[in-house]
Image 1 (cartoon, rainbow, N blue to C red):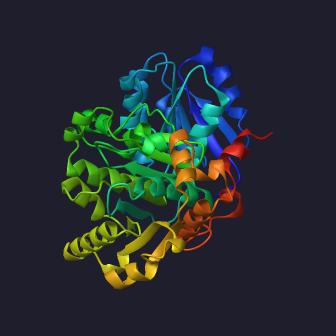
Image 2 (image 1 turned 30 degrees about the vertical axis):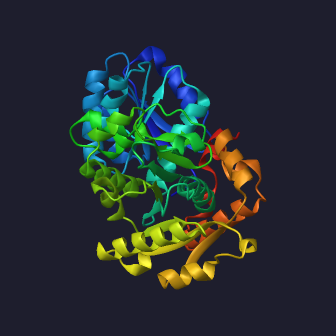
Image 3 (image 1 turned 120 degrees about the vertical axis):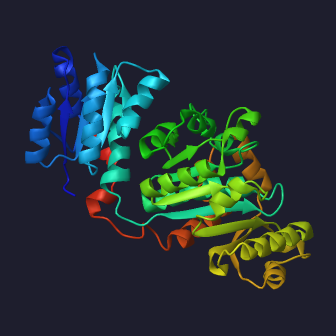
Length: 395
C-alpha cells in the first residue's frame, strides 16, 4: 500500500461540497481524487482510478445514496466506505452500515472523529494482511482476576502489534470489561441481538466501543435479563466477524460451561485458564482443563496462567500447579492486590497508572508470548506500522 490513501467523495448536495472537501483534504496522507454526484460518474472513477476509500454524503436524501452504497459494496468488496450525515438516530446509522459502510461520521464533522474513522478503516481493512488469532481467558474460580488480565492483555497486544485488539465481554450477566476501562458503551451485545437478520461486519463495527489505547470492545447487556436474547449462534457469528476484521481477538469468558461459552471456546486458538496459588483454585483449574480436553480441545491450545503469584507465601508454588496439571505454567503474574484493585476502581488500565509495575511487565511479557514476538505475525511496511491516526492529523 502506498503512503497516500486515494479517496473520492460521493455527494449530491452542492451546498455542502466545499465544507466536505475541505475537511477531507485537511487529513494528511489522504488524497482526494475527486467529487462525484451520480452513480455513473462514481462507477467511472472507480474503474479508472486507484481508489482505496469512498466517502458517501447521505444528506439530504439518503435513500438513493444507500442504493449506491449497496451496489458499490457488492461489486468492490476491497473498497473501504465511510458514510457522512447530520442524522444521529440508530436507524439512520444502521442503514448505511447494513448497506456496506465501514464507518459513520456525524455532521458537523469533528476533524478528530473523521481522522479516527479513516484510521480504523485503514488499520482494519486496508493494512490488514495477517491471520487472526482468538484468545479466550477464563477464571478457574471466582475472583481469580481473569477479567483484569483479559483487559490488560488486550491493551498490551494492541500496543505490541500496533493494531487495535478486539475484546469481547462474554460474561453476559455480570461482566466488568467496561468498568475496567471506565467506559460507558453506547451499544452492547443485546443491540446486536435486536437488529435481526444477518449480522455483518459493518453492523458489528458500529456496536463496538473504541478506546484510545488500541482496544475496541463489545460490552455485555446493560440489563441482566437481556442476556437471554443472545444465542450461541450469535456468539459464534460475532467472533467469526471479529476475526475477519482484527488480527487479535481476546474474549473474557464467564466461569461456567454453557452453550454460549462453548461457542466461543470452539473458535479459540488459545485458551488461558487463570488460577491462583490456592488449593480450591488449582483443583478447579484441573477440572476445567480436563473438561476442555474431553471437549476435544487440543492440549497445546490450553495454557495455565498463575495470577497473584507470591513465592514468599511458602505454602503452594508454581511447581505444585505444574505437577497437578502435568503441564508447565505459561505465565505468572505477581501479587500486587492493592495496585490492581486501585486500577479497577479507577477504571484505568495498569499501564496507565504505572508502566513499570511488575504486574504490567508480566502481562506485557505474556502478550509477547501470545503474539509470538514483539509485533504482528506478518510485519507490514514501515509506513503501515506507524500510527495512522497521528499521520492523518499531522501537518
